[in-house]
Image (cartoon, rainbow, N blue to C red):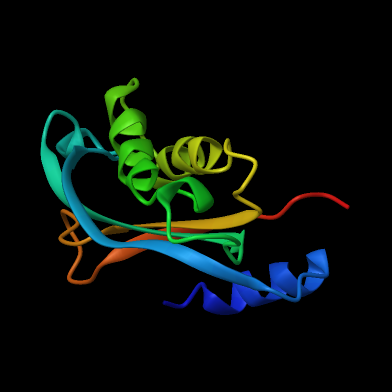
Length: 134
């Protein structure tokens, strides 16, 4: 993922020596999203990619020792259940706010990509990154 350098930068910034990431990649949802009149009330495919910086797990092979991957998809689903967003950046921020709630989440990136945006021959997207303040 393109965000890997962001997570490396975050780990260095935080002074971590033993770290990793968890990822949700290529989750596709049909979303009513956009600022244009022709986008309102019409769903379009949007891809979600999330990466979260975590410290390497310690201890035995137990889900209790890691940040559960399932909360990443739940963060997307929760954000989609809120009021309609006009901007991809607004939806990405909502997801990022949720992703960063667990204390085990040290930094994160959230990327959204409109796979078939109306009126364009390309894909359009945004990526938001959040690192803690020192």
